[in-house]
Length: 274
Ligand code: SAM
Image (cartoon, rainbow, N blue to C red; front, side, top):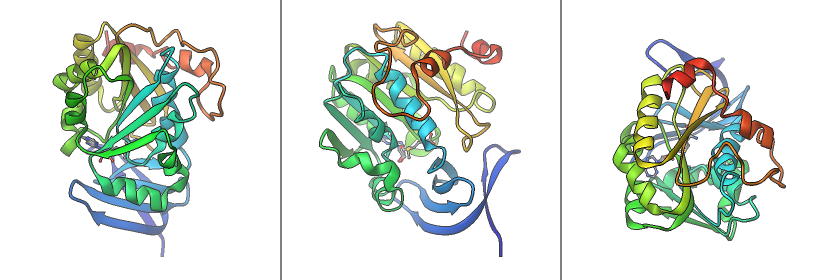
C-alpha cells in the first residue's frame, strides 16, 4: 500500500510526499512531533503538521540562517540560537573558527532528544564542546541576558503556540538589549509568496529596534512556496558587506557570492519591505 504525507501549507495549498516509514509520533508538552521517512527528501521532522527540516534539503536553511550573520560580524565569539532543537544551526555555527561559545535555547526538550535519535546528521554538532543546550523559553532567556551575545539566530517554528511572541516588536527590543554594542541578529521570516504581511510587519518592528534591517532569501524546496526569507537586524555592521571574504570551512549552499546575492531582492519582495 502506498502512504503519502501532506502538509497543508495554506488553506488551499499543500506539499505531498510519498512515505516509506513512520519512525516516531508523539504529543510533547508543547506540540505534536513526528519523524517520517520520505522517498524524495529522506527523514523529515514535522511539528504540529508542519515540516521543520529534512535530510535532503536542510543544508540550505541551516547554512543560510547561520553563515550570513556569522560572516557579517568581524568577531562572532559568543552566539545564541533560539529554537533550532534539531541542531542544524548549531552544526553550522561550530564550523566557524572565531566562534568560542554557542548556546541553544530550545523550549521543547523532546525535539532535541528525538533529533538526536533519528536525525544524527543534523544534530551531531550538539555534542561539540563549544555548545551549551538550555531548555527554556527563548523570550525569557534574552530578557535575562543583557549585553551578552555577538550574534543571535531565531530558528523558530511558524508563529503559532510558543513561537507567537518570537515575531513581536517587544521580543526584537529584548534581542537588541541581549546583543553587545556591535551585535546583530537574524530571524527566519517565512515565505514572501504566502506570508507577505508577516514579512512586512517583522521588517517594520525590527527597523524600530535596529538601525540596519535587511531581508535576504534562499530556496528551500520543502518550505511553503520554496522561497524563504530571513530578516537581519544589526547595530553596526552592514550584512551586505561580509566581514570575511571566504568562509574557509566546508559548505554546500553558502558562498561569499551567495551571501551578497541573497540580498538582491525581486521587485515584489522589495516592495514588502519598503
Ligand atoms: N527550521 C525550522 C523551520 O523554519 O521550520 C525551525 C526548526 S526548529 C525545530 C524550531 C524550534 O523552535 C522548535 O523545536 C520549537 O520547539 C522551538 N521554539 C518555539 N518557540 C520557542 C520559544 N519561545 N523558545 C525556544 N524555542 C522555541
